[in-house]
Length: 229
Ligand SMILES: Nc1nc2c(ncn2[C@@H]2O[C@H](COP(=O)(O)OP(=O)(O)OP(=O)(O)O)[C@@H](O)[C@H]2O)c(=O)[nH]1
Ligand SMILES: [Mg+2]
Image 1 (cartoon, rainbow, N blue to C red):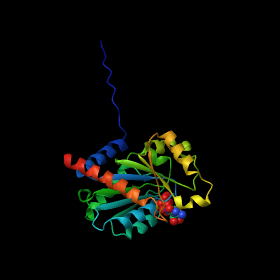
Image 2 (image 1 turned 30 degrees about the horizontal axis):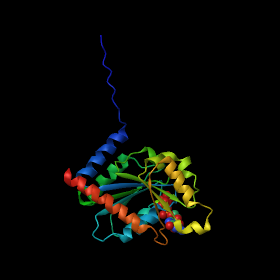
Image 3 (image 1 turned 90 degrees about the vertical axis):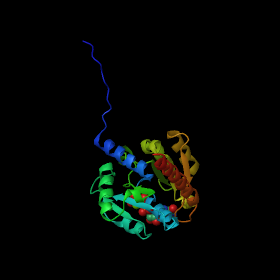
Image 4 (image 1 turned 90 degrees about the horizontal axis):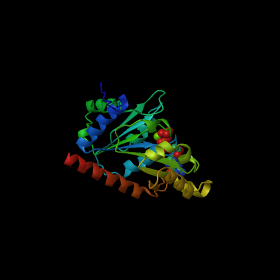
């Protein structure tokens, strides 16, 4: 008897939920970006500067993840856009179930996905775990700061490979730290050839226009996908 071997890719639970989220983002023309870095690389500081620069009528919301505390949500809520903290307890990453649950809870507060153009997720500070969890996002964005060492892309290649954009943060500290931005960029591109890299400083504002332009361009792309359906 002939046997036909049917090879079926079995998606794990997270992947199934992530695909459902991706579909919801696509249907609603929402751009979702997932910011990932080591603790303290400047994710929240960058988001503070980002929200500050947004038009007050911008339809943007932020989910920010940490093991403990509501500190980041408090920092970001000052700008008047919807912000929710996800405290994971001990988990070192966000997963698609957590995102789905918080989107549901948000609905009760009249923050609906259909009313958003941009959903920014700040992941738990960690260069390893978040890289394995798809959140249905359009793009992962990795931040590497000038105080972390140029070799991080080589030591933690997965997240640099999977990210569409690298933000080289705290660029204002370059005169004071033994860090070669050229070598850091070279290492990142060894792992991910052609990866887009933007140097930024949340302190001086350097590079923030380029970052905002990147976001705007990606948002327009997501909007058009939503229109086409
Ligand atoms: N000099 C300088 N300091 C910065 C910059 N961005 C952030 N910082 C400082 O770096 C520290 C950590 O910044 P956060 O924005 O809290 O970092 P984070 O990545 O959100 O940290 P976790 O959420 O804990 O992972 C704070 O003391 C910031 O003031 C920058 O561009 N330049
Ligand atoms: Mg933070």
